Image 1: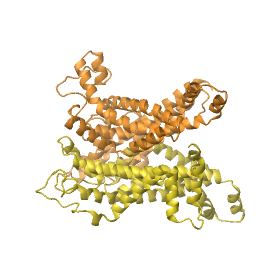
Image 2 (image 1 turned 60 degrees about the vertical axis):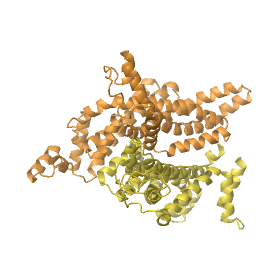
Image 3 (image 1 turned 120 degrees about the horizontal axis):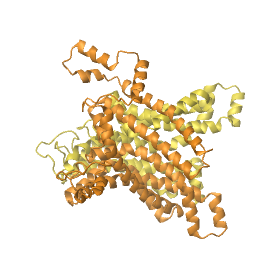
Length: 300
Length: 337
C-alpha cells in the first residue's frame, strides 16, 4: 500500500511529459477513491453554484401564494415552503452561498494567517510569544459560539460573516506555517540566502514561504468545510443571514417548525445539500492531508 | 516533581490564560460598535437619559479603565444584568448550568463509549473493511449539522413513530419535577423514588443525547484510531510482538498506552462540543445554559452574551486543568507543557 501511495505522490507532483491531467486524476482516484469522490461532489456543487440560473426551474424567491407547503410533486420536486417558494430552486441557489462564503473566508484566513505565521516563526521572541498566547486564548472559546457572538456584536451582514469567519480561522494557518518555519529557520538554504544579502522580506516570502506552506494548503478544503458549516449555523439561528434568503441554514430554520407538523421537505432537502457539500469537502481535505503529511501516509 | 508542586505550577499557568480570556470577552462587545445604551434606553429616551445610563454603565470612561472595572467585577462574580430577564447574568447561568452539564455528560459519555472501541478496532486493521467504513462514517458525522439531525430525529421519532415525547423541555408537562438535589430530573427522580418522573426525564433525554453522541463520536473515532496507530508502530509494541506475546496481551498494551492521549483528546473535545450542544438545546427547547446563551446572542442581550462566552471559556480552562491533573495522576512522568 505504501508503494502505491508514494507512486501517486510522484504522479501528482512531477510534471513529466506524457502525464496528462486525466492520467493524474486517475492516479489520485486510484490512490484515494474517497478523495476522488470528495472532489467529484465539490465539483458538482461548484457547477450548481455557477449555473444555478440555468438549473433552477423556478425563481428561488418568488412566492406562489396558492401553493404554500405543498409536498414534493412533478412541478415542485422538493415541494414548496411556508411562503410558497420552490424548495428545489432554493436548494440549488443555496450552493452560491456555500461557495460565496467559504472561498473568500478561507482566502482571507490564508492572507492573514500565513504572513503572521511566517513572521512569528522567523522572528520568534516576544512577538511570537504574545501571538501564540493570543491564539491559545482564542482556542478556549468554542468556535461556533465565538463566531456567533462576534457576528452578532459587529453587525449582521453577509460581508461581516465572511470577515469574521476568515479572521477566526486564520490562527489555524498561522500555527501550521509557524511550526514549519521554526523547523526551517536554521536550515542551510535560509542561511545561505541570508549570507547572500537577501532582505528579510525576500527570505520570508521567496525562500521560506514555498517551503513552509504545504501543510497549511492541505488544510484549505477542511477549513472550507468548516466555513460552510459555521455560516449555515449562523443562518439557522438567523444571525448574519436572514430567513427569506435562499441559504441552506436559513431554509432549515424556516422548515424547523414544520418538522413537528409533518411538512418534512422544507428542512430536509437543504440539510442534505449542506451535508453533501461539507462531506465532499471533508473527503477531499482528508485525502489532501494524507497526501501531504508523511506521518499520516506512513500510518496507512 | 511531587504532586503538590505539579498542582501548584499547573494552576498558576491558568492565570495569564484567564486574563487573556477576560480581555477577549471584554473586547468582544466593545469592538462591535453596538451601543448597549440605546438598547437600555429605548427609542423614546432623551439625551439626558442617554447620558445618565452611559455614566451608570461606566461607558464614559476611557477603554482601559472600563477594562479594569470589568475585570474587577468579573473577579467579584458580578457579570452584569441581563436586559431580557432583568436579573443578574450569573444567577441566570448558575440556574441552568447543571441542566446543560447533564446533557453534556450523557452525550459525550455515550459518544466515547461508541467512539473509543470503534477507533481501536479500526486501528488494529488499518485499511481493512471496518476501518474504511468507519472512516467514511466518521467523516459523515463531522459533516452533519447537529440542529438538522435533531430536527430530523424529532420528525421521525415524534411525528412519524410517536415514540418520543414532544421536544419541549426535560420532563412531561403533566408531571411534577422531583425535589431538587442534583438538578438532574433523572437522578433526582430516582433518588426520590418517583419512577414516573424519572422515566419521563429519561424519554426526554434520549433524543438529544443520541444526537450529541453521534456528533461527538465522529472525532473520537478518528483521533483514537490515529493515537492507537502511533502506539502500534512504537518500539514497545514492536518489541512485545517480537517477543511473541499473544495478540490479546499486545492489544491490552496498546490500550494502556493510548489511554492517556485519548483521555486528553476527549477532554479537549468536550470543550468544543459545548457550542454544538447549545444548538441541540435550542432545537429541543432544553432550557439549559446553551439555549440561554444562543437566545441572548439572537436577541442581542449583550451582557448575557458576554457572561455566557466567559462561562464557556472558563469551563474549557477548568476542563483542561482537570484533564492535565488526571493525566499526571495516571502517568506522573508526563511533563508540564
